[in-house]
Length: 234
Image (cartoon, rainbow, N blue to C red):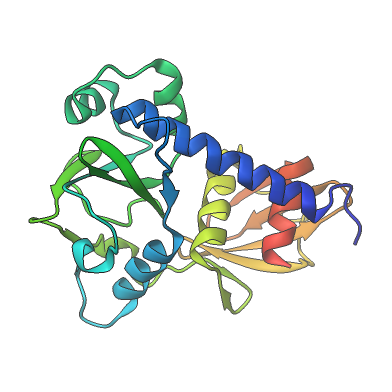
């Protein structure tokens, strides 16, 4: 199957997205112009691998970090502006809040008043009483959300990587779901397992159609979003 976008364009888009996220966190806590804010994908993988181990209900992030930090914050796409401003002790613009609202869960690590690292995790992966959380290097044990256990995101029988799972999760949240039309995607190109439900996914030249009998819903994405989904699932 041929799509109109090449892989190199997708890679460029990812680089631009990472740069944008780095700028966001500089805005949050006032990074210096020389600071390099890194998306620690290895730490994200290690946190999720810890969660996958039998009997493990929490993770000490200080033991998984190889950099200096004193304070940490957890933000989610449900974090409220007033709460974020209270945590970082600084005014936050509506533009920054809009970008935070598109995120899943983000762990942000601060050293000497500057953001030095951030970690992206799936939605509701870390348990929290509110929609954000503050922690420190001396109190760095974070509890896992038990409700997520046993619900990996899969393409067929293959469990997706942390990065791909985050992308799929973001796409699934963007879809405008409708009452299912079961005549669509009955002969799928691949089956996607998401939040415990199986979705039949069928690709065309410029779209991806998804149907779930369990959820009774139908959804469709087009253009670059369909290309992203195809690159990950196929």
